[in-house]
Image (tube, rainbow, N blue to C red; front, side, top):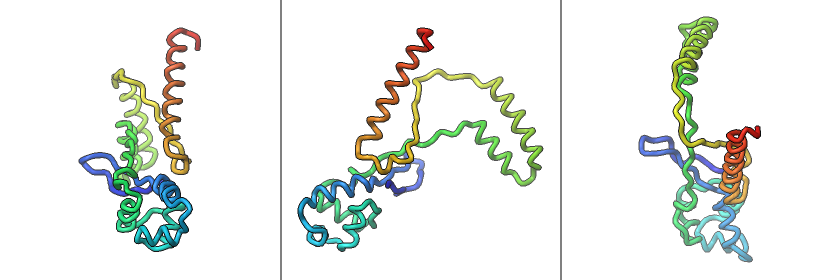
Length: 169
């Protein structure tokens, strides 16, 4: 499971603490040591060590102590999250539909008119294709699996584009 650590800021995207990787590294580093012995060496409680090894989020002090015990920088467990882009017309429509001064029917009529105008006047900007896939189970996948899935999906996307361009699809 990944957990939010910091809110969205003007300086960059939110980052998440990869507690699954932390737990895996703790288990691997612990080796044949008992949980109690490893916890004592890491200077954290037995229950904290056990919970974090099982995938729970530690408090900041425990996190720092566990990183020190592992001999890795805390930054190793943080991964930036790609923010989800919101279509400007969808954002405008959501504001309209939530406006308490508008009756639902009026908000719907205005929304339909805006969408029609937007679709007629918006210019498509060509750029590199972006593939996005939300994996609900990503937090329980082994490290590296989401990246490999991204590569596979990218390859599939490129193959489909080639087939479309060649008229095969």
